[in-house]
Image (tube, rainbow, N blue to C red; front, side):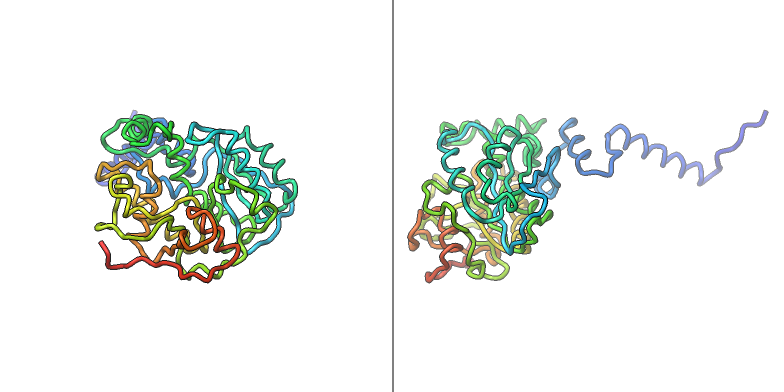
Amino acid sequence: MTLPKIGTGRNNVILLLCALCMTLLYCMGTFSSANGDFLKTIAQKDVRLTAAKALQMPPQNFRIIKGADQLVTSSSTVVTGYFYTASKHSTDEYTKWMTNMLSTLDPVVVFTETVLVDKVLLLRQHALNATVIIETTLQDLPISKIRSDRFNSSQLFWQNELDVDPEKHIHKSYQLFWIWLSKSWWVNTAIQYNFFSSNFYMYTDIGCYRDGHYNGERIVQHEDVVPEGATLWAAHQTVRQPPTRLWHEKLGADQFFYHSGSQGAGTSAAWKNYHRVFSETIDAFIERGWFIGEDQMLLQSACQLEPMLCAYAPGNQIDDINYFAVRHVLHYGTDVELIRLNATAG
């Protein structure tokens, strides 16, 4: 009996290469067209994933909950997030602040976990048609999957970040770092879905509303104060740019630390550009062996790398808590001059 030929010469080489490629892909577990399966592969095998790549990923293992079938249309959307984890403030404090923040009238996208969904919906009964919840877990935030080459797993990397944190006695968990470092990713995810047909987005920590001053109000009323192409942040003290654009010495030279990361605002285009630079800044810190658990130094460094992407509301010139000056400017407008960074500094 003569066996059929599968090919000769060059054809055999091509078939062999194809077979090898398919075998390799199968072994790596990458037969998938979805980013979700890719991230599962990363988690299972702990292949190193950079922030620049991880923070471009869509949400994984999530559920979208709309407060109403028909949502409002709005020029602006407010984005926030809250998860139970050890932090420097108590759960009771956050419950009070969350109650204040969610009493506002702005359309909101809230990233949170299953046990908090009913609480959020209860606090948004007055504006269910302006409410979207993205239910997920801390472990499914893409930032949790990154690591440096020094560590064999993401868990070891993040544990080391907590170990070297000079303020670990108040921060208490590395999961808190994941929340802080996901701010621009949350905004960009909200932009991708664009639930309320908005072109302007404000990020706010849910803990910014420590009294009832803004309760029942619409926060974003003056989008036009933000310079075109820029994101707006608060400078909690006088802006003194450090000698280098990448700067991580918050405690050692705090005269150069001015960026408050609790609130930011800008157009969809501005946020997308800022998010890209911020993700790359995380990788730059990791490459230098610098601590990345302090989000404000990363946010500030991203602004210093691309000064035209940022403007600052001077917190010491505004009648509000200096760290939360962005909400004041967006709500009341401003007659103070916003601060722009010197593009030639550092």
